[in-house]
Amino acid sequence: MQKPRSIDRLLKIMEDLRNPETGCPWDKEQTFETIAPYTIEEAYEVADAIKNNDQQSLKDELGDLLFQLVFYAQMSKEDGGYDFDDIADTISDKMVRRHPHLFGTPEPRTAEAQTVAWEEQKALERAENTNEKGALDGVARALPALLRAQKLQKRAARVGFDWKSLDPVIEKIQEEIEEVTDALKNPDNAAHVSEEIGDLLFACVNLARHAGVDAEQALMSGNDKFQRRFQSIEDRVQKSGKTVEECSLVELEEYWNAAKSEERN
Image (tube, one colour):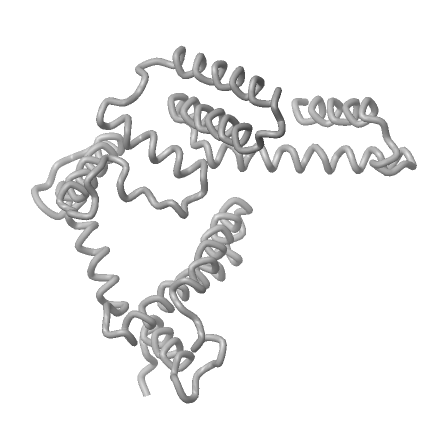
């Protein structure tokens, strides 16, 4: 017997898992809404494997992410909607449409030129979508906050709502810091404090964008740096015979600065 294609085997497994009579009780109960959080989690685990340069884990995590797609396709198929082939055809059509220099009239392009053309084609598709009227329509609310802020700012910039230099961007951050400081004078108004801090974070994302830095990746790196240095503090405290709780803030700051110096050297 000829071995089925890998994707056909996976699709059949998914169909069996969802079989109303003989399928897995957990898989049969799932819906688009209940699976969505797992999809986000799997995407982050793919990113983590890439960051750790762990190819074996990456292969496993990519399989888990592919399984999420197959899950959605099966649920839609059961409802008489699209199936896996429809999804594959849709993305294939989109790639052909967005790369006319390859699949239409051959045209040499730099990576930068292709990025511009890609965004122009996306804008054209959004204009043709009757559900998307404004420049910011279609930016998913479920995106991580920093990533969504960056996308919203890029969309606004494409229609001319953007500063042309870094100076006003930095001035805006300073203005937002002052507003946060003012809001903190009335800490009982937690909603106002939260709003002003949100404005400050949004302004910082704008600075990252103008500097050509991915805000999400920058904060991820900052998180990793903090964890690495804090673990160094814990190691130094342990060697001193104390616990972190027993150390004064002055001592901990000395350990922190030592960790920073060690990294720079």
